[in-house]
Length: 200
Image (cartoon, rainbow, N blue to C red; front, side, top):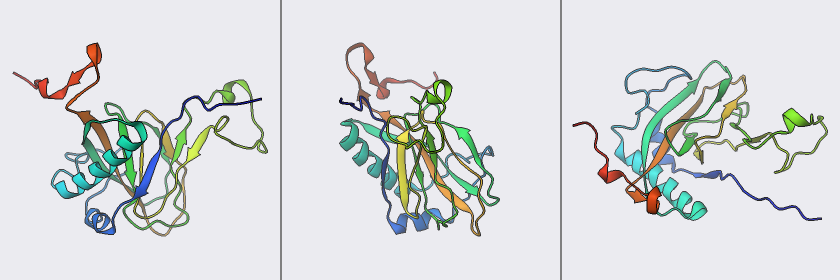
């Protein structure tokens, strides 16, 4: 009998240069569910960092999804976890792709980011036991790699979280959301962002 993986959700990953990571380290961070002016535009005054991360994302998304369009970072923020508190389940709205960059030191006890499988239905139909081997067809979640300089790219609709932890240093990461610009699509599903007007 044959089984085919009909569709696949992409997760891109690569390493960012140490020089870019070092430039991010002094920037101010926030804890989850914290908000203040400019908290979610931390790269506003850092065009070099923005361009480097955008170029890296575009290279990946063009190769993986064959999308030939321009992209911009529409929000960016640094999350700092000094207490080991869990990151609650969430996803990102009003964007298409998101990224997480571990720009600072990573300790062995720092938890990996867990992505929830949006197609997973076994938890409501069939209860798996602890000995059930996990594969791409039955997994309820995916744990992404974590290390200093590692960046992850993923569709923004994916819910993600990480468990609580104990570590001697904070868990720090830079998150960015991406959105396409310019003219893309076709026929009655075409969008040209150059034609959008913002106010009168």
